[in-house]
Length: 354
Image (cartoon, rainbow, N blue to C red; front, side, top):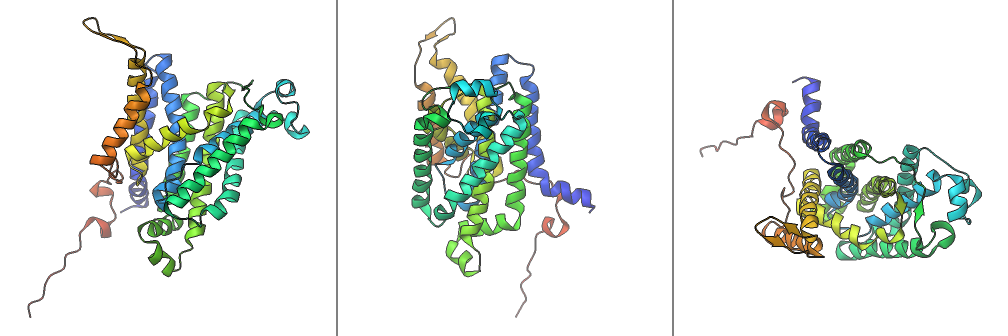
């Protein structure tokens, strides 16, 4: 087997998922601008869900605080990208180096991810000592604290006011590039030694510690890597909306992104991608039904709140009948001709006659 075949076999699930996502983006170009915006927003959320998966899928700890990194990324991008004359009006209390900054949007998104990762490193060091529901509640506490700061730090964030002046940047191809980068990083991490050690602690933490694995360190690595892409997605989301509002980065986005990961399957990268696709399609259908539908022979009146109810019902159904998600925690299988020779053939043990 050649090195090229080994490389393709190693990355086959990632390549298939990337091809599916790219095909959806290309097909969206044939549809209406409204559909293209839906696809672009889905790609941004895909970066967020994959960022959550990097930590949750490998550690087994379900976090509720990653949207805090998204909010931090959105505001960091705003400080760096909005023109100085606009910042002088909206945020007169900004430090001089931020007030005069006007970075290109791509650098602003990368910086947003870096600041979110640095913040994750600081708060993650004590949080990664916790286990189970205590760790989940700890991450939610971080989300609540960050949301309160963003909503009330008037001199730096404008408080409850909206920040505007972000230049156009996030289209479906930019969002696709960041989503594919997040997927590649997630796959590389889960195939790395750090990823294997972290999944070992997920299956049996006591045995992993006994084997010499530093569980806190491995969790922190995944936490920081995931936070980078969630922070960058926050910058993309700010450019996508054109404004930054603190209340956007709290419970609603938390519920939707967690629902996407749980519905698709928290144990695999394929689950993260499938969950985003399924929930986005269902949400778009329910959004149209919410406004009322006229089918000619029957009229469906508007039903506000139907989108949230529909997602909650789907999540309950998945949890009851398929607890591990639609993909059951499995990746896309590698074809036999791309498998390594020592993996493709099952080991057979013959019994010896006594």
